[in-house]
Image 1 (cartoon, rainbow, N blue to C red):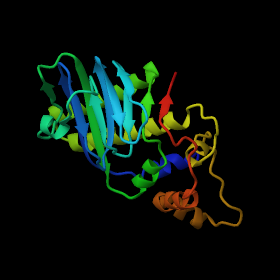
Image 2: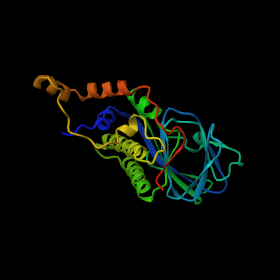
Image 3: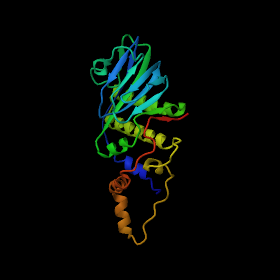
Image 4: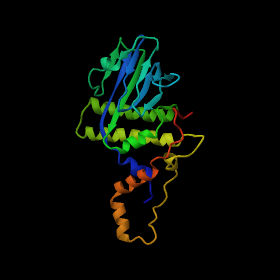
Length: 249
């Protein structure tokens, strides 16, 4: 079987919890999101708004169809008008969304779908730390795929069925994998760093000269150890794009 180091490492990411739903806002509004440990995704279904992140020089305008991800859980503001008095998002979303849509000021102006994830292993921190603070997907085809994941998660949460918890975990893991693949295949001015290196097509695994068949079988039976070794070897390598990334044209 072809060696696929990126899949080896991503298999170590175990989603611990996830939440998905939406907010339908009307009138003038500004939601304040505090810093968190969550990996946050936002898909704008209708309307438009401004995304202002802490320590960012300029706000990002989001249009219907846009998909953004904030891997590091920064504090940020989402608004129709950044001059409006802020409202803490916790006073808008007062309980787990569980696939529901919360209406604010009657709704109708801007509908956004939200998904947040936390992961159970320290390996997630390594991967997240190598991503830029903002991933903004503009390609129509790519953002449609990402929005599908979020819509599917909402259905799973809104209509609980046997196996739903596991399905939700798989959907969140698949969404993360799609984002990483989009990130490493973007056109970067400098193609350095371990994420970019791992976009090279997988090659057939080669057994080291002198290794016994028993040793090869042992490595195949313990992919976690192999992937952990890869993480250790790439630790300290800096990914080239440290600022916001626009994925797609």
